[in-house]
Length: 145
Image (cartoon, rainbow, N blue to C red; front, side, top):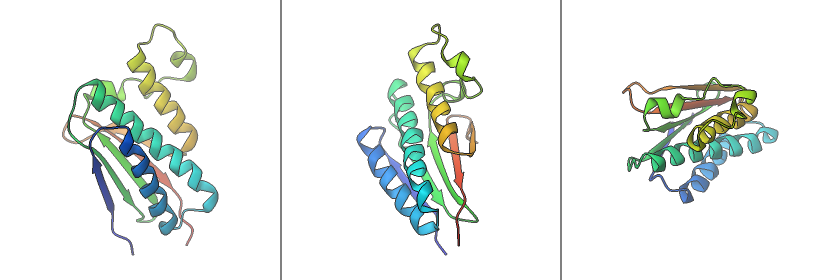
């Protein structure tokens, strides 16, 4: 039985690679199918890149948090500390709305990140964190044991 793996890193793009590498190693050990590991790598990278971008945009020095667990399925949580409206602002927009030129660069970054994540992960949830500041991106993949 595997314990939950937790990472926290300063909001710098260089740390996203480490989160991806650890995430894939944990996924492999958890029993995620080999053909899904590229999706896991891309999704973790995208979720962490989105969190880092929000922290940098709002000058938030707090670490980005990543939590990986294999309790029943392989679940990854990426938590940012950006204002809720920044993190959730475009979660419900469709592709036509994302193509609208009147959207800001920041809004497009968040929206495109969610669009990419939805393409990588079937079980994707985006919600505010309990403390009222920040967003949790939760992604789940099946494990085969």
